[in-house]
Image 1 (spheres, helix red, strand yellow):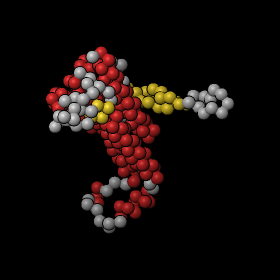
Image 2 (image 1 turned 60 degrees about the horizontal axis):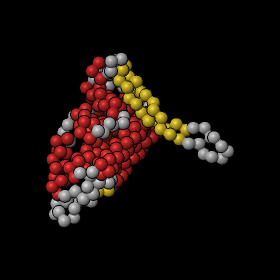
Image 3 (image 1 turned 120 degrees about the horizontal axis):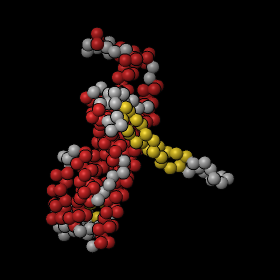
Image 4 (image 1 turned 30 degrees about the vertical axis):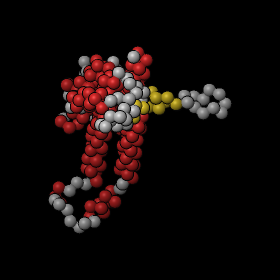
Length: 258
């Protein structure tokens, strides 16, 4: 079974299943998240106190005027919301990628890596998927590893996003002992583009993804710069890309071994 799999057309319940298409749609959606974040950051940086005050006064009425917050208060509040949104959206995207990957893995397994899964084989994969989707994050990783031998790159960073979201939603962003490792740290590994020096004449410099770490100690508050927020989505892209490639490799291995 390859990345492009066609179920048996003679089966009435079968449908075309295409990992490349699913992965492409996922990555396009991820890019929209990145673009929207860039737009929000740029908008927030460009807004002025005068513009904010004028907009607030435009309707000439407020729901609860005594509770109205000034420009500086709203800047801080908007930033906190943005961090929570990025962390939450990124975690959801990682889970979605894992769910997509699991369905294809289950289908490959049920069909014996055949190129034309039957409706019955699809049903087996769908039943496995129904069990997988509600699993907590750590159990999803365990299933992918134990059942399919898939070790997810950046698993620790995705897990860290889960801890960060807990801290943001339940502890006002303060890292607790339960979120930290044995060294008392919550570590988020991000991916950034590193440009190498030109080696010859007019050849353009080459870029590669490099690891950078954002470390929060127990008791510290989670803070991410604008660039770091954007790199969270880059990290998710690297996570999903590696995961989808693992599915393709799993299909090839099972097909060659069958």
